[in-house]
Amino acid sequence: MGVRAGIFGVLFVAAAGVGVASLHRRPVWLAILFTLGLLAWTIIEYLLHRLAFHGFAPHYEHHAFPTDPVYIVAPLWLSLSSTAVLLALFSLAAGSLAAGASIVAGVIAGYMAYEAIHLRIHSPAAGGKLLRALRKHHYYHHFASDRVCFGVTSPLWDWIFRSVPLERS
Ligand SMILES: [Zn+2]
Ligand SMILES: [Zn+2]
Image (cartoon, rainbow, N blue to C red):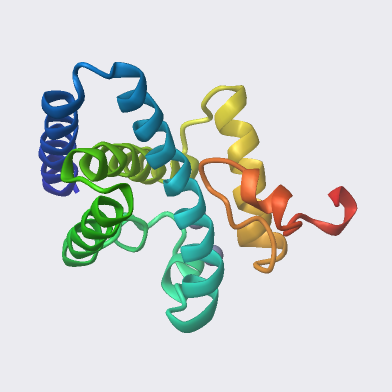
């Protein structure tokens, strides 16, 4: 896990470096693209969990062994190849590698936050108010109904797509 986080740290620095080197004269633009990447991660996280993990690529193992990090952190081949595909897509969509890399830096930051938060949620550490709120949301998905509460780093897309517990919708 440490190695995976390290590789993603290097990728993040590389992507952010390309963005900063190319767009340093337009810091606002750089910040907007990075924020877009963060936001893109939140919807990727939601759709991945809802459509893949509870659809065509079920994550039974994580639901059976919620605290086992092996089933929390994605395998490196998957996260690295997905990052390459996203870099190509965002660079094409945004019109340059610099813009694409700036967006992908945000996506990587969001992804790393997701892995860290998901690990923390399933760790015995109580955490602060925010972590406890996220844990409550995620535990509902684990232990009450796996048809709601797909967001891990935020309940944003659960609110938008109304995949919230009945009593709270
Ligand atoms: Zn979980
Ligand atoms: Zn799940």
